Length: 236
Image: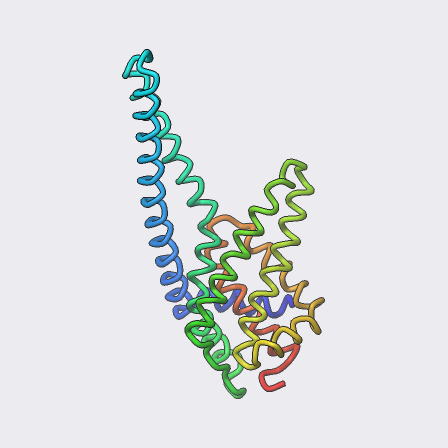
């Protein structure tokens, strides 16, 4: 587990991995910007429409009050979208990064396992579906843990353990399905659930570091490629 993490960290600074990271973060930023612009326009339209309706229905209120209210709500909407973008960025980066899982795994296999058979790239449709699942899992972890944050330390522990379990499961399956059909990959994940979860704790620690967590797909994929090789082997 620690060996897999050390190998993953050491390779993340290599030129090929940096290229993958830049592509993944670029796609993630583009997605967040497009979503942010769309949400801002939608909410601004709703606020303006609601103000116009209120002004028409309650004409006794001076028109300037509604203009100020629209201005305040527009600023609040913009700030909310910025905060939401920061909140969603790791999940969106996870989604964008899964488009490059096979590329990341190829780099790991060529550098560390050149004498062993390489994995097979996932079909495009399967890769997109798994990427969407991984992003939704990342988002669900944050949303489900939010109520527990009211209990201070308990929320952090719940979020950390949930992140470790869910992301270790998803990324191990992505690594295993390069060599095995999905039912067998899931069976292997259940068989080796304990060491996979332990490796997931390291992924969760990585995810908890702001900014750095944008590289989660690289780190998590590399870790699980190493874990799969050590636990199962490429042809098992």
